[in-house]
Length: 258
Image (tube, rainbow, N blue to C red; front, top):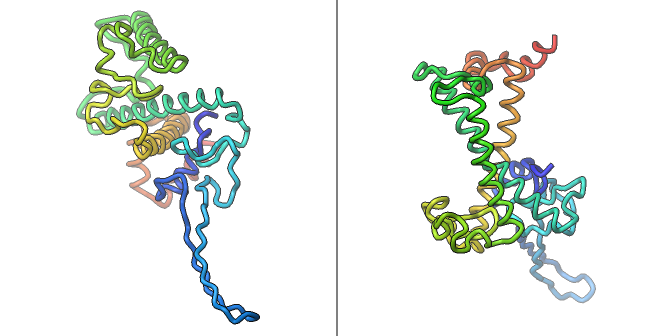
């Protein structure tokens, strides 16, 4: 549920034209007092919180300060402040993995369908055997590398800034900078310097989390596509474009169910 904790993709789509978490609507009222005969022309500024469902009152613990917070938490998972911090990091990490996954699947599937490279379809790639190492060796290496990276990330979450201390990362601490948990920064992970001032990087955070939520939904779509059609996303797209009115998700689901 961390995927939807801070607003969900629904809020991002419904309110994608709004980059700010709060919108100030100014309303001018002009009237004439029937009794006193005096004209009244006040200016009222009404603050309207951007929520995933317009007009819905967000829970008090989702106050709009988090990037992508549209008040979506129907199960109340974020009521505990410590749990909310963890869910924020969990969503951020899943978003980044999803964006990498979507880009990788589309790129390799494009190479496969165009015949540029003889690659397996993405959901069969894990069964590929390599000459330079066995599957067991690759699994062990992946566990070690990912385990190290995830341990460092968790330690920085528990004690922010601890992993930027001298000698804590093979002398690469200065290259990471440790802007805040979840945003290590530095020339290695922020080579363009887009968010050097992390305290004023709300817009960049918002763009990242919106794209991340969209990528997570795309990954869910890829999983369903693979299960139903047994082909890759590019093949599905080409088939749809060949007959847009009859090759749709509705017809595909009904055909597979029958």
